[in-house]
Length: 392
Image: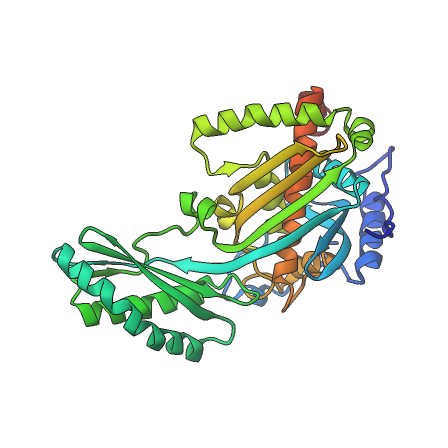
């Protein structure tokens, strides 16, 4: 990766949370990304811009916004170096991710790629008996071309790419998969799934038809880990041994050993989240960038892989198979969300994959830093120092 161009974020020992410190960091971020952060600075937005996002509007919630970075990451849009906006009330979270980003930079940055795209919806139909469900299963292939044409005629951004029936006794789960452009696309997919399932119900004599019959939406589920949903991202990096020692007071061997013990615990839990603190970094960036934070349950699913390379440095890889994010639609183009996406160079059309890839690097940075804190025994002390909001 090229020599870093962005300077470290300034710190002010006498008053790091005062207005002058916040303004200095904000102005640096504005210059780095070529964006204006007027709403981040406190300028109100027109309340009417919330139409379609909320009902019974009374105002806006304020969450502290910090910057981590610079983050160096090679994405499908090219090499990128950005300050990462993170909205959180958890002290030490931004600092932890910032340290992880320094570790990534020491090895030349991370490489992150979307390896597949596809939003699934799985309506379910009920029949009198298993024979009826079997007959309906045979009809799907013939109905699929018409369904695909219907979807193409009703949206500019999405497309129906597959329909796979899965028989569960007298029930038929219809696994529909869509591409959604740069939006999450759930409303489009739900409307299309309703059309397809009703069409099949009519053709096959179903007694019941449920558009959310096998509902993976916004819940932890095994399919999110195995099959993926939304955008599947793989992000990896190599961290030099010397950088771990100087920045995190840990060795590659220590991190590998700690991670090995964690995987035993994860197996005992039966979890679909085999990362370490993916929910922390993802929630902070999703909130900052106007995403639907309820998708965190699926987004945080994934795996962390740590190993020693041939030179004794640390190889690290985060796999996130179910990132449900978008850079158009929802709240992504409004107020602080648009400004924060602009900081990442990910505002608007054509940017959703790059945004997902940056999120992969954020997760990897956070996991590296936290694992190093566990290995060095500094975890509790760091939270005591940074994460205790004692009365002034």
